[in-house]
Length: 444
Image 1 (cartoon, rainbow, N blue to C red):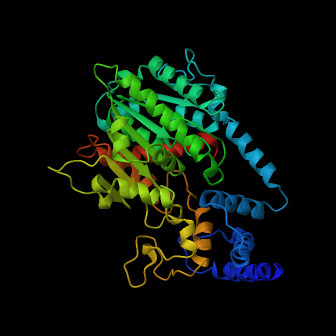
Image 2: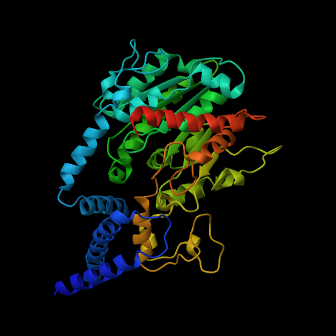
Image 3: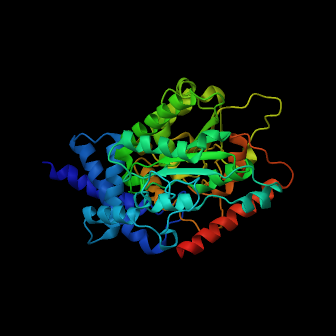
């Protein structure tokens, strides 16, 4: 009897594959459209079969992870999922040729006097450390000399076998590099691969003229959509780091301002680490928080509600509020109206979201003709997530999951950084040139 629900599921999946070509948030590359639609159509078909046949669906986090693995397997064709994952992990461990040598500055982790073995920080850690701004960069943008060398500490998932051991190394590195002597300390939660976006950190380093330290502790090597199951471990890592910092800062006669930054899965990880919102911010002594492109879902919705009394959410810099003479919110969200990663959630399969309400104004980059159809819209948005971060070095478009064009202004506002006159324009020019130069080093 179960063959009938399965047949119903396959038919529904085929229909979903056809209708998924309708207006959506992102453009899909022509050469992969058929493969992706086919893979996801089968997946939606099986999901429908489960629903019609009375099977119990996995919990949302597991379901999203299975969806990601399903698409990888569909597009990969002959490659087994296990081999794909192993290859991705190996890629995450492999250093770029341009960054094969450890940084020389004593203010960066993995320097000669460091507790860390440079080979353990992985590809993304090496990129992050080598992206630190120079004194020349600072003076070129601000017109004033640097007052200190920026500190960057990155601990890879391979740097130690346990969460606490990795946090202990991070704290030792912060001590060694003089991080606690800086006026500002930033905790950045990496995404799944260990990716810690250097752009927002560069903004702070430039505008504070080097008087800042940043620490990032990684928890994995796989892309974010394949790392959803590691969110609890990642949140445990961030919570342990914040606890260690809290204890250390309590001993200082003059503590630095503590800021947190999370982007994409890193945003979800940090929010999971401090789920109570302002009470957790207070306990950990966090002075300001910026979350960018937080993946959609119940946790994100609940967290937004927890901090709604004193938070700002913007789609782009033009929406930044004028806070002259007003209290400055501690919590800021940068979320594009047309970011499928922000909108993707299991609930979308059966319930229309407010951003697709008929007759209501659409957000920026949400197609006017995009409509909600049960199951199918969820499929469209799921596919969109795989093309939401297709970017070109130096070409900042402020679209989908690409927030580079917004970070200069939004980071400045969220962290209340000094940037008068024509400094913002010079900062934007610097950020673009820095990314182009970095891409050239990587051969991109």
